[in-house]
Image 1 (spheres, each protein chain N blue to C red):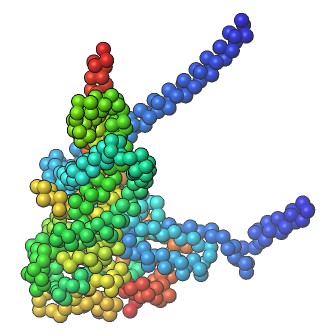
Image 2 (cartoon, chains in turn cyan, blue; image 1 turned 90 degrees about the vertical axis):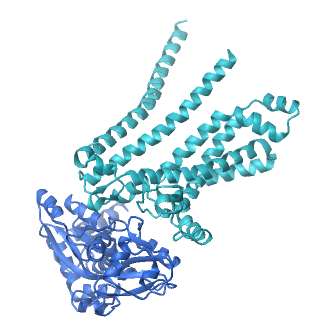
Image 3 (spheres, one colour; image 1 turned 60 degrees about the vertical axis):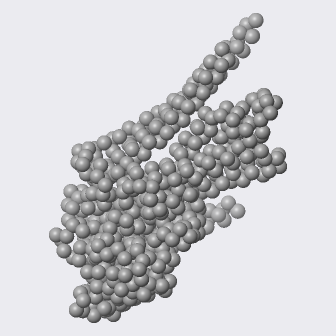
Length: 304
Length: 290
């Protein structure tokens, strides 16, 4: 009896250590995020003192002459990301549907690792391909003045977002119970009607989350867009901006951070852009997790 | 065996402690010089470094690029021994350095001309400074206005952290006037490297760009430039830059934080000697002693 007691106490002692370790690891990631946020705010908010709001939210970005208008950069990022979504979302979802619902086993087994390889290509390699192959091709085939456009960036970012969208959507489709499909087929629907009317809607929230994460991935991408979008801080005014050069927030931070002297207005503005980028990414992630949360609540309702 | 090893290490130790200034100089470097800044100067700085190190094995030089702004920022933070710059240091930068306790010392180490480049398919061969300014500010937007084909002009430039960019802004876009507030047309492509500029101009008949003479290859066409429509159109070359007839040429600088210590001073003195300037000529820049 005392032996057992002793062992149990030793076990619980070990358990205590492990629990604390795991706890520390868990809390440390929160701590790091908070530190990053603090660092961003501490370096970005002084911009309010250095630069007037009318300058900060104007449409001219030319920092060496103290034009700090960040609107063209924000909209530039949004245009490229929107383009990437238009390209990546349909392709990604259709690929996921094909892999999960239609493809024969051997195609499935070949496609899934290939898509994972696509996820592993370094973005600078994609950027290089974009600058050497895609941009001259787009200039000639669309008869544009230059191939370094938002569209070039969008296509490459679409390619970067696709693996994320495919693998998460495919997981979502796989969790749809087999009984749903069988019931639909039993009612006499075709395969297409089953996919479009039953399976995809049932996996809707997972697919939405895949889209959000894919978009989040592409808005933060830096190297590729810096190499292929021309980096001209033009204010995008219509959808035609997709076919013209733009400058994104990420490319601006990356190419200008090396030059600024610490504490100058330009330095603070770059950090302020970092804050804006952080908030946008946070917004996308919060939306994604709310979708997941709503789904859980609904399934709980159904089960009860 | 042990004894043998011990003897050898003793001999080595004694050799290392040998009289200073002896015939044998230690082959491991003992002096480190950090050199950073202008991308225009980086290849030249590397060539100088290589040649100088082969003559002075005790000196180890490390050269990095990043742009003139990067070099001068490092100078102000006192983290380099020599900052390379393709533009003159600004007054506010001198003030910042002074407030950090030293005055930057300037050395003109070479000259550079900026060539204006277009695609080989472009029939335009010459431009005046005024036309060039109008093109890059966006007042001229079609090649037909300067005698070319009916094509929209695509302007290509280095990023704003490049000394070449700032120089071009002052000398071409503002034509040297300090009152002018003109800036690059907003749709000017800002590319992160010289190679990117050459590639875009090589492939695109719409494009016009500029780059340091040392970076321009045969893949693009160089345009002859005239000060105004009364003057002759001049192509950039060592001769035209040294004569002062080519209008877009500039000095290249090295800055040290305060009076340089002896090894750094020796290095810069060597750069300014005919041996150092020979390398300037070899790399396509213009030597300061004609």
